[in-house]
Structures are given as structure tokens and as C-alpha cells.
Image (cartoon, rainbow, N blue to C red; front, top):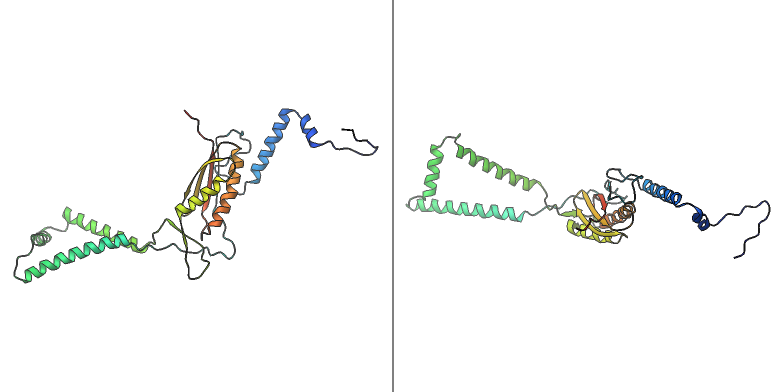
Length: 258
């Protein structure tokens, strides 16, 4: 390669590769650490709880970030309510108990009207209720059980239930859609496995928060977490939920074998 001719009053800039080759190893490492710190500061758009500091060494064991719920875009319906459960099992149990008690009592009343003696359990119950005072321990226990059962039924009637179904945005006014939390976790897990450096991922989807714990076997943990933040945030947006949950990402190194 021929050396370019120099002219007076001009300045020639050396190629970057030649300049980097002349730098000492410690100076190159310092600039690499500075670039890593600058990249970490650029991703500081969320609360810093659990986040690794910029001066940590590359072989750190864990990196985490916690984010607030994603903002709802204009035109999105973020006020969809939860689905109401039919409560088939509690309603069926209560109906069977009431039917059995009413049928047994009706049979005993008909037997008494037919000049037959009342059943022993009804005579014993009437005698106990007439003789036992109100402050008796068994009377108080029975009253407490009845109160607890009544409160449980009122709670079932006043709460929607179906905690595993996340309401989605309503696109059509006559159609409501919901997404199971397990399906949402599976979809986000598949998206997280596409990130370079991720070895395994465990996703736990809740109604208000999605917790992601990943294991990375190469690349810096902060870089992997930053990619997971972007990928999973886009994945949550793609789920179409009415109320996007918060996102918590934790990345660590695999444990030593043996």
C-alpha cells in the first residue's frame, strides 16, 4: 500500500483501526467500561430499584429492573372490568344442602300429620334448643359457623372471581375477550427466549405484575436485561390487555454444577 502524499496546510486523520491498535490494553479496557456505563445510564427510564450500578464488574451475578405499568395509548379502553364467575360449585353445594334439608324436614312433617312419631333427630334438636341457654358453648359455636358461612356466601356474591382471566381491550362493543394468565406467561416466555444470551426463562403472570426471571450464560447481564425490557414491553403491548401490568425483569448467571 502506498503512503498518501502530504500537502502543506492539510491534516490527515489516521484510520480508527490503526489508532485502536496503538492504544495500551488498560486504556482500551477503561473506554470499554465507560461505554458500558453510558449504555446503562441510557436505559435508566424506570425506577432504579434492584438495578446494577454502572461501576459493577462485567462478571456480576445478577441484574434486575422494576418498571411501572405500561401507559395506555390514546383510543385504548383501559377501564374494562373483570369477568364475573358463575359460582357453579358453591351454588350447587348450597342447593344440594338446602334441598336435602328441606326434603327431610318435609318428610318428617308429613309423617307427624299422618299420626306417626316425629324423627328422633328433630325431637332431640327441639329439646336441646329449649333447654340450652344462649351462652352455652355449643350454641355459640353453631352460631359462629352459621355467621361464617353467611359471610362467605356474601363475599362470593359481591366479588367477580375468575382471577386467572385478564380482561382484554374491547374492539367490538358486543364482544368481550379475556386472556388466561398461563397463556400470557407462555407467550411472553417465547418472546424472551428469542433474546440473545438467554438460556432459560421463568415467567409468572399476575393481574398487576409480570415477574420474569431469566438465566443468561453469555453477554453482559445489563445488556441482556435491556433487550428483555424492550422485547417484553412490546410483548405485553401485543397481548392487548385492558390494563397492562407492571414488568419486573431479573437476570442472573447459571449456578455452578456440583
